[in-house]
Each structure stands twice: as structure tokens, then as C-alpha cells.
Image 1 (spheres, rainbow over the protein chains, first blue to last red):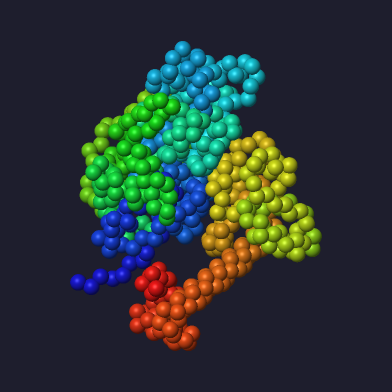
Image 2: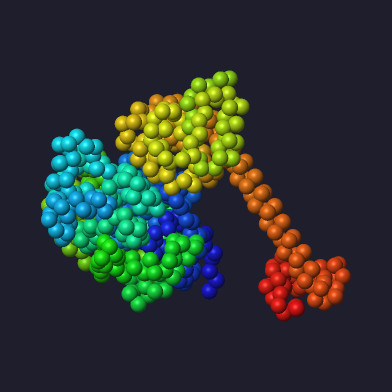
Length: 377
Length: 194
């Protein structure tokens, strides 16, 4: 049978461990088996990823899940319709604080903090004292205003009852500059993916307080986002891409392949770091302070039906968190528009029925009552 | 025509920033500043109080600036990305050239458009110059490789210079490769010739 040649899909990515599926789909021939050509383009900022999708320079991209929702709704600098047919990962991030803030937390508690609630309670006392002394708010670094990192660090502080609006401020810092900004005192802590947490511990400038997976087993991090026009112009390519990504997700999710995956991701054209560093993130084994290592099998989840399936309730939930972080009200109309960004129809057309879904999305469920339910339903 | 709009160029590449600045000045824009460092960026931007900010897309600090424009009280007026909704091709051209622009709220499109066009054009000129420089460098290093391999062949096989070159050329044609690749192979196997 003669095959008609397909247009090459141009897909943007940021060099992070959670781009694993996007990279493995190309490197391990999952795309080729679908007779699909992909050109991967490395980018340096999330704003570039957003704008190149909006101006159709990219067909699809590795993108922060909340950014895909925000961009579709026009929250932020740009409005452009995007479609999310596949989730790339859950978790993989940590909350790291400076060594001096860590010592303060120990002093307040009288012992090393155990678990996020305890450390967050200490943060309430520390931030209140600072406020009484007239000290400026504590600064924390996040990777982008619309990111699970911003949501997680807020959630953690709320667990301890910290007055976020008055005692804390969030600044955007590109991941490669986090450690430097922590050691120079520009920020007192941050939420970011690996290797930028273990790097702070290894350099003796910070300690890892919380794994993202401590706060939520399914915290949605990056997704495959595509320009919405592609889903109408070329359903064939979308189907091929999703089948390639599903195969890559299963391969990446198998612990037996981690060594190979670490080798691929560490290449100069991708992450350009030591394979061992990538492997530690894949295994969820990190140094958390000068004396201790910690392992969590759920530290980073790549291939999992609940993570990969684009559950629209997750998009509504992300939308609610975005509006809330800006002190703005949610509306039922926007919530519907947010839900429509996630496209189970595309997923199911390519891959068959999705997973059995629980009555409540595990993301919203695991964050518990402190996170608001979206408005109208 | 003199235009007083305060324009700020944020670019790590000094040479490129100079080319853009020159273009803008020639077009009558007298208030052009340039920043290349992220050190205390916010305070520096506040001091300049720009109305139009042109940023190189190669900088990861673009994400930092975007958030500053949205939340900081130091930046006096709201700053938005400049997107010409009536002309999607212009955003695409700017992205492909590697530049994006932010403007303070209320600045008219007619005023911003020619400035952005000038920047896009100068970015393109710069990347063409860069490409030419890169290919000139590559050609130079190819020539050095070929000369060294030729010398090696002349000594090892007692060939004249034209004969040594002809031998490499023939190999390149037979193998459908570039002469410089053949030269590199010869140099890699230098020991075999000694």
C-alpha cells in the first residue's frame, strides 16, 4: 500500500525531565512507527512556547497545564485557542528552602520538620513574626505565574494557615537560575522540578522540604498542547501523534527503561546534564538535606492512564486555581470554556475508551477542602 | 521626524542591540535605551519608564519580565504584549525573527507598528550577517582541514600538491561526500600514513 507523505509536525519543548514522552516519541521511533514526522524544537521560555503555538509556528508543544488553560481563556498576555488531548506527567517537583529558613523552621518546631503540614505551620509563625517586625514579605520563586508550581506552593502555605496575600510574594525565576537566586538571598525558597532542588542541597545552599507528591498524588504538571486549528485541519496527524505519545508514555513509565530513558534525555540536544541526575529524578531518589536521602516511587509519574487522560474536570479545577491566585472570581461561562480545552474526544478517537473515572477527579479530591470547587456545574 | 516615545531594548547581544538602536535613531526615535543584564532589572526598568519594550526571544528572562509587567507596582502603568489582532502575520514575522514587544497600556497601534517593524527587520539583518559569518568561519576551517590533509598525503605518498588534491577530490566524488569530510578522515587516520 502506498502511503501519502505527511506534513512534519513541529513540536516545542523546554529541556526538563517531564518532556520525556515528547522526546522518547521521537528518539525511540514511536512516531516513526505511526509514519509521523516530528521536528522537536528546544525553547528557553514558556512565553515563547505560548507565542509560537499562537502564531502557528509550532503545531504542538510540551506546556504547563495551567498555561494551556489560561492562554485559551485569554488570562495573561495573550489569547489563543489551544487543545489539550494528552497529559504528560504528574508531579516531579519539590519545595526547597534556603538553609537559613530551614534552620528557622527547625528552631520554631524544636526538631526537624516532618511532613508538609508541620513545616507550613512553622511558616505561619515565621511569616507573622516578620510582619510584626515590619520585614518585607518572604519571596518564593515559581517557574511561571500559571503553573502547578505556583498552585502547589500556595497550597502548602495554606496548610499551615499562612497569610499569603500579606506575608508572601511570588516571583518568576527560570529554573536554571533558582539555585543562584536562593544562595544570593533574592528568594527564600521555590517550587521547581529536578535537578534544581537536589542541586541546591548538593551546593549546600538549601534543603528540600516537600515533594510535590506529598501534597497530591496526581498534581497535573505538563501537557501536550496543540493549536486548536490543527485538530480541525489534520485529524489524521493528531491521531498518529496521540498513538505515538501513548506508546512512549507506556515505555517511559516502565521502570525497566529508566536507564535508557536517562541516557536519551541527558544528551546535549535535550537536557544536557549527567544521566545520573536524570535517573535520580525518574527514580524519585533525592538528597533532601546534607545527611539524608529520600525516595518516593510516586515522585514523578509519566505513563499512567489517569495522568495521560485529559479529564475536563482537571481543566476546570486548574482554571479555578488561576482565578483564585489572582484574587478574581470564577464564572460558570469561563469554567465551561476551560473544561472544553481538555479534549477526551481526541484521546478516545485515537486510543479508545479512557480509564474508569472516579466520581471526583483525584486532583481536586487529593487537595481536599482547602481548594475551592469550581463555581457552576 | 522626531519621535519621543521611550523605547527599551532588552538583548544580551550587544552587537545586535547596537544595530537596532542605530536603526531606530535613524528613523527619528531619540529616546532609545538598552539593557543586557538581569541584575536589578526591575529597578532599571522603573528608572527608564519605557513605553515600548523590545525583548530578544533567546532570553529565558522573558518569563521573568512578563510577570513583572503584570504584578509589579514599580512598573507604573500596565504593560501588555503587543499583538496586532488585525494582522496575525506580523506576530509570526516577529517570532520568527526572534523578537517580541510589550507596550504600555493606551499606546496607539499606529505608533507601535513601525517601531516593531524596524526591530524585526534589524533582527533579520543581524541573523543574516550571523549566518554569513558562520558560513565564512566554516569555510575557513574546511580550508584548513583540506590543506593539512593535503600536506599529509604529499609527504606520505610523495605526491605533488595538485595530485594530492585530485586524490581527495576523486574520493569525495566516489563517496558522494564533501572534500572537507574526506580531509577530516585522512587526519583522523594520520598514524596510518606515517
